[in-house]
Image (cartoon, rainbow, N blue to C red; front, side, top):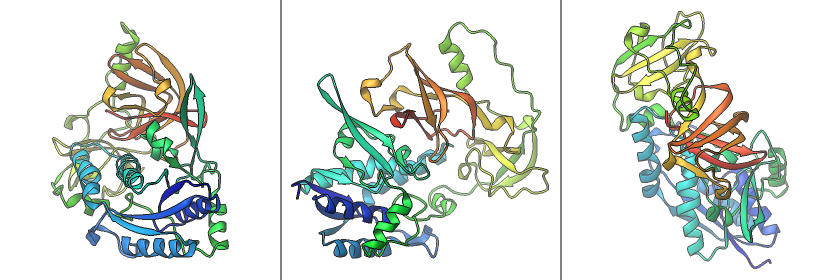
Length: 397
């Protein structure tokens, strides 16, 4: 025994199961904790594992490993911090990332505090990412690193963690690849060894998002308007008084009007759709698939364009408000007027792209070398220095 106590978030999946096993092998005093975050099965798709089955699997793993096991009900705080937030964001035409929020608000806040109250030194999760520390000016600084398995790297989901949270966190499978994790689970006879990876909302399971949203957001018929590929966008000035003025102009999305295209169909509510979406439009007879270019929730109109290369899908400059700018590495935070070359992504598993951060008095601008497709307000942009995730922010527009 190394004398340290760690609480593992046992989800009933193979990753958290092997996490608990590895920690026990390393001499930690391990406690398994299952978080019950959702009670409504009416929006969960059939044939997907509900929380009851997941908690039963987590209990079997705990018994196999000989570790204590508890179930804690966090459904009230989950509804308040995650579900209500999602409804509010979709209602105003933004697309939140519930997994990033779940890690920030639930796993590494409420769950972490619960673990500390149980006398734990650390919490551990089955995320495919790594952590290490460096000394800088006499102070220990924790680094959040990409997982060794590049196909499963989940550092993006932890992009809102802070130094305090990182100091109390362990990620034992971050140095492993998924097949190795399954192999360990099989060798140890863990019931989760061949269990499929969970999909859908964090801790809820595979959810029918339209059904989920319709619990609170009511259907409302509106027009689908197609914008032609050769649409003439307003010209952008060639010269600007300052770099800040240029970034401000280029970060603003063009907002279409009804006269910019032609009506090609109807939808049940603009708030049910998101930029870049292809499925669910119900409009046929086009040469190329239609993609959502913009959702106007106030006028209840969806603007679409043909083909994944439609100019309206791409954007190079993103704006993050000061209040929504987060540095995992606070010591690297930029001051107004400073810039930093990074690599960045706006979605999990998206390939990292070269970008440059520009910090202004008005906020942070992320400038990509090439335009990214389907950038949606409400998403998180995360920036990296090599394999280290150093900061993130909510895309404003």
